[in-house]
Length: 305
Ligand code: SF4
Image (cartoon, rainbow, N blue to C red; front, side, top):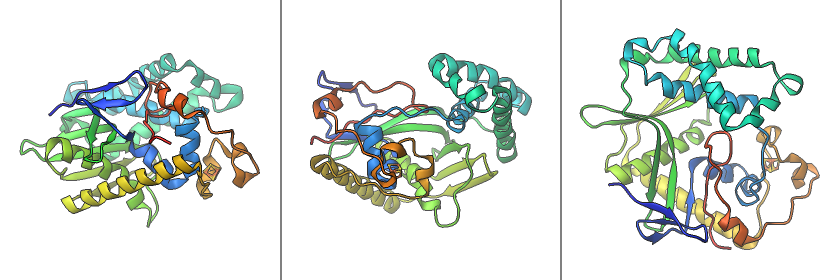
């Protein structure tokens, strides 16, 4: 069943006439689990983050893998995929011209970086044969409203649906597979999508599949209803923790090895910085969500302070 989602003038989201208490995507949920202060910087303050060559490579490679399946099955070859890189890069540049600034004097040469995009695609063909696949959906927007009125939403890279109705959820990663002991954290995003699909389509996806193009590995998981109920409880608990942080203003830093990639270290107390004052809650609620899902932050509605 398709739900109707709209936005009120005050910025809050309404689904099928029901005021949601907030919305959450897997990446923002993962931010809060990693570091509540990082979540605050990205979602409450909405601080800009400079694009990185790695992140934009991910955008380009995802676009190529999406466009590849527009071709007839027999044409989905490594050569045709390589031909799609330049148009995909042009589309990213047209959407966000500022990404050009990270190359040249400030970073890698575009030509060598484009070669690294090609390398990711070469590795893709070692893991899957796209001539034998007919995805049911690509870059699929999915959402569901939980009984608590929390809206879960996100974009799924690819959905494969067998003639028997079994669903495989596929996500591409241009980085390396997680080390031992970190697979469950990586799979949280996929269970989140599986929960949304189960709630909206009434079918527990048969397979969750993360394709790591940085290390030629595929991580697979077969969820069951208990898994997805546990994921729902986890998401609700996360939302309660976010609501508490919002009420108290206590967004704790959680330093880890990820700090090395954090764009906000200079204003993080763990690194001698001072966070800016919290923005006016009303302005945050009314903020217009940015448009492109992979280079900038995803839309999110926050709990009332
Ligand atoms: S530098 Fe580390 S602790 Fe500080 S906000 Fe970023 S991830 Fe969190």
